[in-house]
Length: 265
Image (tube, rainbow, N blue to C red; front, side, top):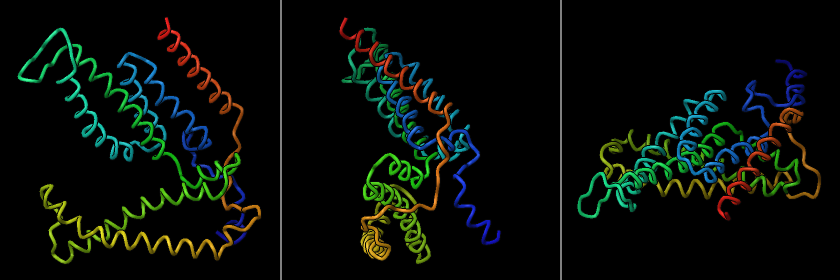
């Protein structure tokens, strides 16, 4: 790639060649929020599990199924299974299936547990999928395009970058601990003991990173009262994309209004 091609590369809108990831980040957020919030207005837990399956299909369509599964299975195991067991064991019910001391498992409590975890898994899945399919620099740039101050967008971008940087730093420190012969694997207690010494270097790295960023921002005149320039350009929102987002929003508003009407009647 010569210099001219390299320069023209920044003039072209950023595309990923994927129907999901090429959506405008704000429109993608809109669609995912509607999908996640809709489960709270549908009383049937079957709809929540349908939404979980739909999110898996969207993740596969976006080419992020493996990354999505690597995070989502932990949520299903830790939160989904735990909440279901607690809800099924201690919620009141009439048709008893199992009873022992303070544990009362009934058909009603199982249905209540399924309803709870379907909502939790659906909404948490939406959050995970949005993170997996969104580049944060694209998201913050889209925010600035609708008038959000660049200081706010920088705080959002910096926050998520700091989380990923801390994770990478923790892995580097843990690898260095292993190289020194310190045991970092084993049961939960051993792993907790291994992570405690890591916290000090992580905090120091985080503080030094903030100082380095502030110096770099001052050197680049971050607070100058001028219009900012960008090295990326997002594709223009098509008419089909706008129409689809409007349709999703209209259906969601109709769902909310219908649910409120049922509550009042």
